[in-house]
Length: 383
Image (spheres, rainbow, N blue to C red):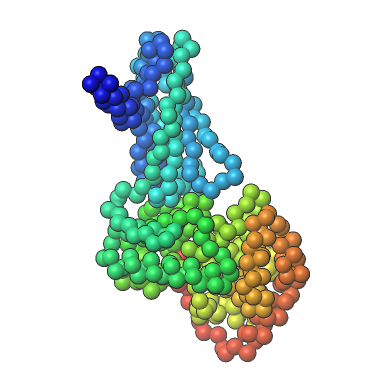
């Protein structure tokens, strides 16, 4: 009976220790009274600490790490400024404007405190995980395989239709390139583009969707009445996540034309809003070079649309003429940290200048007989 009672007391004490962040104490009276963190989405992540001691507390450090793809553990340490006292209450905020583009919804961070007093006593709290959730909405979720869809507007059939589009996109991408998801991903569906931009720190007026590749999260603004466009946006952003997982390495990323071209190619046939720009560039002999397309695209409408159109055409050229297996080999070569020219030479036998020459001949034959161009019309797209 005594052993049973002792076991009950032990279990109670363990539960109390788990549920109470206040029970962290060092010899000499230094103790953590309370510790907490809460999200103020999308602007900041707030951390709070209360501590006490028999002598003045002189040093407080907040340590945190953000859960994202990395080849090295990055721990940030913040020195907290405060007036030394035997009882202290401090707070600190991780401002998202300082870590562009900010943390996406559903991302997580882990934090702990290090506290020291004038007697030399030290205490360090156990790491605690906190989610950076967009609590402005009542999210529902649906999971299939490695994909979880989160949404707050629309019925179950709405989410199921978007999930079906995501699963089909994964199948098509694997068939075309051999690329597959390696880790679970989250898809946050906002009710429209305005709600989406309200979840971003640095939104652009044309943003319809965004992939936070390092976090395995994408966010898209899809109104229930605009589901066809939404499916296309899902395919585009999902491709970015898959390709990022497929090629992630500590040395180099993909040339922009390949990353964006694969996302465009996954959507299906190139739309007229893009072929118009491509046809005109061929007619005027004003195509952007492959070298230039390896860098970030222009922020201006005409240059951006032409860049996306050419990227689609480049990927189409490689897959049509050399096949799926070569594209998979190219992605695998980039995963090894190869240079742009080195990867192309290894897989196809030509560098970027060689690709530029071959592709120009290919695209010119496609569009030189194009009919008179229609007026250019800009559309909102989530790239």
